[in-house]
Each structure stands twice: as C-alpha cells, then as structure tokens.
Image (cartoon, rainbow, N blue to C red):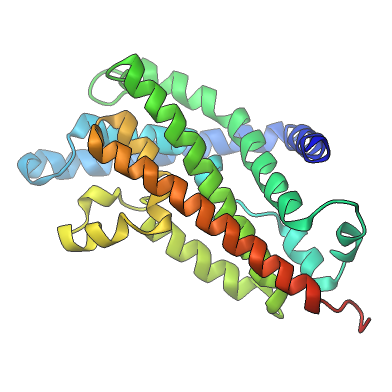
Length: 267
C-alpha cells in the first residue's frame, strides 16, 4: 500500500506544477458556466413550471460542475499512458514490483485531484459571491453536506475506475483514439455533463440512472443542489458503490488476461 501512496504523492505533486494552464482553465470555466446559466435562464423564464429542477438548483449544479470539472471530465485521461501502451513502453511499468491495475488507477486519481485542487476554489468563491438566483447556494444541512461529500468521493472513484478500464481495453487495440472518442462521448452524454439527467424524458432517465455513468457526477451534484435526497439519495449512493466494485473487478480481470497474452516487440 505504501508503494501506491508514494506514487500517488509523486503524481499529485507533478500535477500541481501546471498552474498557468489551471488559471486558463478557470477563466474558461467561468465563461462556460455563465453561458450555460444564461441559456437555462431564458428557458426558465419562458415556461418555468415545465422544468424538473428549480432554477436555483440548476445554477448550483452548473457551478459545482464547473468547479469540479477536472474530477469528472471524460477527457481527463493521460495521453502518456495511452501512448505507452501503444508503443510498448508500458513494459517498463511491468518490470516494477507492483501490480499494474492499481498503478494506473492511482495515476488517474492523482491527475484528477491535482488539477481539481488548482481550479475549484476560485470558481466556488466567485459563485458564492454572485447574487441570487445566479450564485451558489449553501447546503440544506450539515447532514446533507456529509452525504454530498461521501457521494463526491464515490463518484470520483467510479470515474477513475471507468478511465482505468479504458486504459486496460487499449491493450487490445491498435490505436486508442477510436476507443477514447467513443468512450468520452458516451460518458459525457449519460453522466449529466451535457444536460442534467432530470431534464431527460422519464423513461429514458430511469434507464440512464442505473447505468455506471449516472454514478459519476450526476449523484453528488444533484444531492448538493437538493434535487436528490432521502431514500432516492441512499439508493443512488448504493448504486455508486456497486458500480465501483463492478468496474474495478472487470478492469482487474481484463488486465490479468491482457498481461498473460501481452507481447512487446515480438517477445
């Protein structure tokens, strides 16, 4: 365990070096969040009674989505890992006295947490200072905030497990580009990154909410915004735990199978 913690620390500190890129990302997310809120405001003003979430809850959802974009973004994958699998340099990792799946998982976790830690606070502070109903509202209670934190951790782990699964499946492809494009597109659509899941038709939403993608950012952001609470929140957190175990088990299983058949440079 100490080996993985040490590796996590090194990758996390490495990710903190890109401060200029982080500030550029913060500026982009300010603008993007503002545009999204303006778009939703126009729809709410036209027919407010037709929307499943209150405007305040939607605004809170959007600001948290922008603040923690690096935690849940589908495209937040390491090109270095994908390229090392493609060109065979992953063999150097196989020579280490550690298991490859946990190593890739830790790298993905460190990358996301490092980039999110540089971006989240400026956006949250800015959103809190905005006037109603355009600002970030406080949680309903300390209990609700505690549930939100638990759900955030689980959502992050599910996201990392899915990203690690993409790395593992890359062992069976010639190029990772097609796999990455399909996976990120599907993930963005089904995890609420484009449109919050409550805005989808009921039958479609019911199916989407049991998929692993809904266990990512959808659950914690809706819990904090007040759209998901009570037994619905408990069931959603239970699904997060189930999907985390399933994705991790599938990823480890595929990795074990890939390592048995792996050939580098014809060896």
